[in-house]
Length: 93
Image 1 (cartoon, rainbow, N blue to C red):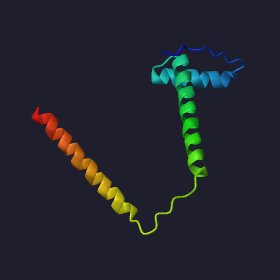
Image 2: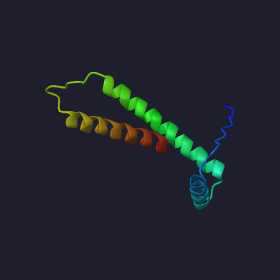
Image 3: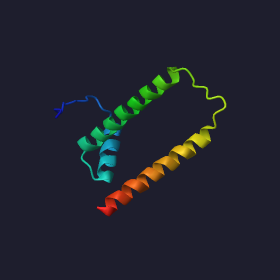
Image 4: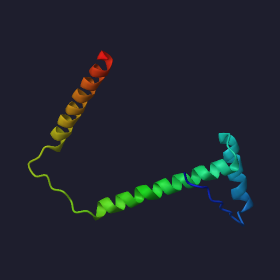
C-alpha cells in the first residue's frame, strides 16, 4: 500500500482555477479529484512516451520472405481455438 503525498500549488491564475473548478463540477468531482485525474493521465502519458522512445532506439527487425499478415491470421486462429477449447471445458464442468 502506498501512502499519499500532498502537493501544494501556489500562484494559480484565477482564470485557470475557475476553469478547473468548472470542469470538476461538470464531472461531478471535487477539485482535488479532478486534479488527481489530470496528474494520473499525465504520468501515464509520459510512461507511454518512454516506451515509444525505447522502441524507436531498437534496431529494426527485417522479416524477409515472411508474410506477417499470415502470421497474424495464424496466431488469431490459434488463440480462437484455444479460447473455444477452454470455454468448452469450463462449460462441461
